[in-house]
Image (cartoon, rainbow, N blue to C red; front, side, top):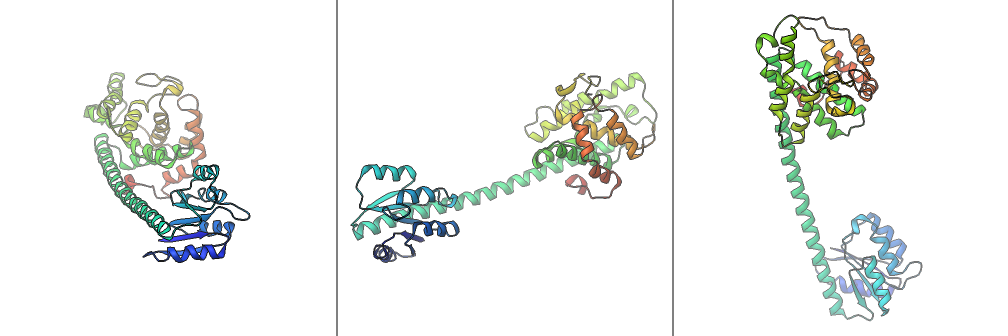
Length: 351
């Protein structure tokens, strides 16, 4: 344990240091200048500080107030050594964070007892901090493991949708990545953008409830068939409803609202503007854009730049203008995703 003695009197500082050094496993440093001691404390860690009250340039109360402003010294025991018996001084010292007092002239036995007890307190603090850090690491590892398992389940479900719907896994992966890029363009932090990225692949999970004859029909659907197809939104909500994790709840929002339109002409609820959850508005842009760029039995694949123009043209009608603006802002990265010029990130791309 390291002890710092701050006293402008060399004889007093040396006397205290010699006594404290008698304790086992204890190293003592001295400093005659309180300002110099503050500089030392900014770069070194001490487990106990004994500071005189009457010093030139800065008294003990001022020193304690400054030292408590350093994060590493928030809990370090500090003893003020003083011949000053004024209660006001003691109260001021306590107010700024003094742990204990020693009155000059002090008794050696009392000094060593106080130091020994405070160092024992400091050891207990350090042991608790160590245990807390170890527990935090364990919790972090367990949380990371759970997140990885959750991500894996998402991918398996997305793959099931892929086989059921007849689309390629690339479509699902691209929608996820483009949704993430739009979220970043809107100012989402890394974790919130990650949730969008993982939830987006489940936007069409409700298609597992659509009959094969409709889902895999090579030509355009009739009005009656389209009405049935649109039910996949409700099926998706039922599959994901009641989730306990933020990821599943966001996936449910996306599944239920990615076919709504900014102008209120979408389905299933005819929501308009900000009535549509932001997550659904983001994935709507990503899903439509990639669908335009993808070949289907009933349509050709649009050139990337034409699809880009269509998204921009639908700003304020089909799509949230803010989401389209984020799409435009992120266009270089989105274009690179579509052309395969950059690797896509995350589990969905590596599974």
